[in-house]
Length: 274
Image (tube, rainbow, N blue to C red; front, side):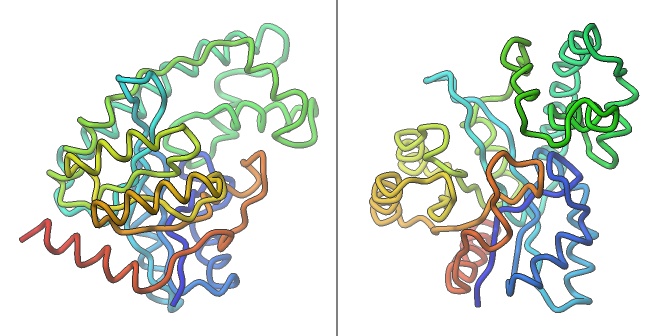
């Protein structure tokens, strides 16, 4: 068995509808996947239901956007199979509201040079639970100003501040634990988070870590493997699929994990909920 435990849909900043994502996973030969949209589980129930009908296991999940207050860097925390949703839903609701607050000045600034409105971006976002910069570009595509998301036009965001404030990764890890979910540090190499991973593992705040990911370098993987061995973490893997809302192509199944790792993840979840 093999699976991809890091996939995004059009419920957040992915381009692919949930149903289509499940179909793509089947076509890629996956036995299991996880829908891990940013700060929302809005598409999970649909994905799980469709997966049961189609013969692919869908693991409930989400990717929570956090901040490492010690370094000032971003950190993403994957949460798998949570059981108690009250605190988790309150947390993610506040993050989505903060994202939407921070994107409004960006839209206002761009509208000074291009004839797009907030409503245009909302329409481009479709079912997404909040607005992302990709949705702004999609609105500009509809107006004919560019032919793809990540062209030279995307560089306009370099000069426009987008400054949402995210909760500290340690506090979020604690909430994941309280929810009965498994906390997994996503792509430690991407945000230079190897030392953060070591700290979280030592403190028992994470139970898994993303070993197989397109943005983990070979040296990153070596260090991650050391942390896995030292703290008995579950190694996970995923493509971080976003469809065409990704600057580098990562089809489903680009990075995977074996069924044995999924079994270990489920075992950890059951231990946490005893």
